Length: 455
Image (cartoon, rainbow, N blue to C red; front, side, top):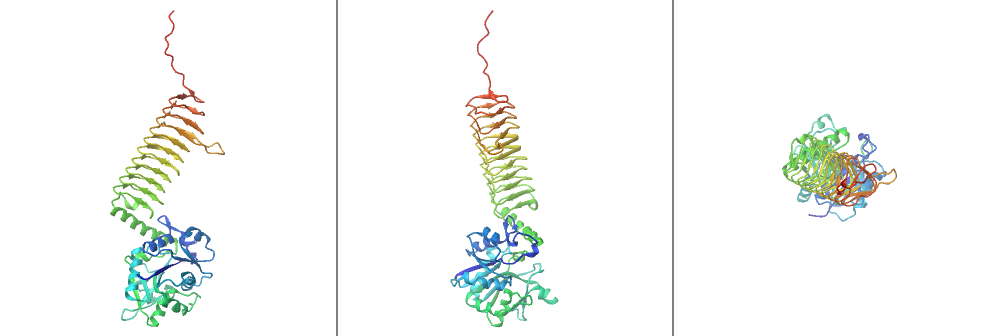
């Protein structure tokens, strides 16, 4: 395959979104529109694309970072002018240039690869992705002559009533032969609104008797562009269906797919069952054989094999194998739960590490703590980790027993095999094997083994 470079057109104002957020940063299935486009390009073998942005694109630049190169379109003079702005950044190293709109999040890498192969095999000067049967509103219509040859694209606002009835539409993905692209682009004239349309390249190439090829999108939805919040919702629905279908084909059971919401970056192991009204977001990874839901939300969390999460919320949490969570538990960022641990109803855990076989069954707050193996945390336990200025850590060593309604005032340590009585307020370290009771907690007096004196 000859040398390729990719250009993403992201300089549009996006005014129809009616948002302070740049249009291409609005999320679809957990990732911004433009991120889906970049991912498809990378998976198609087109690394480090050039992104054409407006001059005030600091937010977009900060998001994309150093993974792309940038070209600036100083004035909003249309898609053709935007591509021309990328010429200097592109350089002279490529034989072909692929151009794609940043608001087309559903174009799959397979479609891009097909377009590239067709472009090379036909030796076309211009190859375009089209779709037949999609919702035509807002799309440029594909004009063909009596022989079926592709001759032009007419934007909807400039199309005649007859042309608007045409079903084949422009998909917004183009391949150009570099040698002819720049001379042809320089001949384009502004439209009635002063913009230079990249779509006019079709008529330009046709008039010069250059070769043009088209590739049909595998699914009409592939070319769905996002201009409004309605479009955004439609793209979300299509992509969610695709994500769910792929997980099911990969061996995941979704009890009710229509009420299961899975972001594009989520990984789920085989034989996991996801119950209704469950949200798997961000970079969440779920191991094999888990049971998730119903009514659960997992965000940026990692679960080992065989975990069970019922009606609970996990944010940035890590669960080792065979952990049981819920119902109504909340595991916050920085939580790491060891194997075979049980986190029960109305338990909140934050910035804490729990060892193997820990049990916290009811109504507890575990914050900024290191909990050893086989610790039992009784109902109503609270770790008072914040003094109003600083958050302090608590350590509970292995095999300790924390009685119901205990308050541990950090910083404090409960030693190996130690215990606290019900309602104890622990303000000082508890030695290994020691039992403390009361408010404030003190060592429990040992029963005397001496017999009373005989009268």
